[in-house]
Image (cartoon, rainbow, N blue to C red; front, top):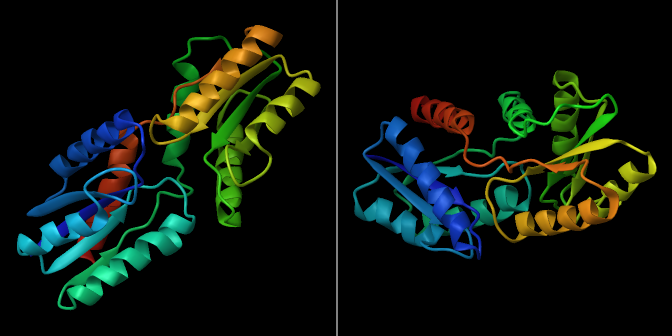
Length: 246
C-alpha cells in the first residue's frame, strides 16, 4: 500500500504551521493515495518520525517522501534524507521514494507577477523588484534564486530584479535596500520568496515600515508566496511522477 509523507519545515509561529496544514490538505484532495500524512522537520508537530510511523501502522509498504520546500539547501540535501534513512533502517521492508524541492520552476514566475499586480500600484519607469529569500550557506540557494530573479526580470515590466537574503548569504536584505536607495531607484517592489508567514516575514514588514517613514512611500511590500494553486499543481505533478515510477 502506498503512502505520501508531506514534509514541512515548521515554525514557532502557529499561523505558519496552520497555513502549511491547510495547503497540504488541498493537495491531498487531488492525490490518489490511500495513506497521506504531514510531518514537520522542526518547531511543530507531528514530527517526521511520528508521521512516518503512522504511515507504517496504517499498512504502508511504499512511502513517497515529499519535501514542501522552495529551494534545495541543507534541509533537502542532508537533514530530511538523514532522518528518513534512520527511519528506513527501523523499517527496512518499506520501499522509499524521494521527492524534491520546487527549485527553479517557470510556473513560479506567474505567482511573482501576480504578487506585483495585486498591489494595484502603477509601475513607474524606474521601478525595481527586490526578491527576498530565506538564505542559506549552500551556494545552490543563491544560484537558484538568482536564476528565478532573471526569469522574473524577463517576464516583468520592471527595469531590474535583484535578489537578497535574510540569513546566511549576501547581499543581506538591508544591504540590498541600501544599494537600491543609492542607485536612486524611484520605486521598489519587495517580494518575500517565502512559503508562509512567520518570524522572517515579520522582520521584512518591520524593516519596510521603518524605511517608508524615513524615505517615502515608494517601497511596496508584496505578499509572500503563500500556498498558491500553482504550487499545488507543481506538487501534484511531482507526486504523480513518483507514483508512476517503477
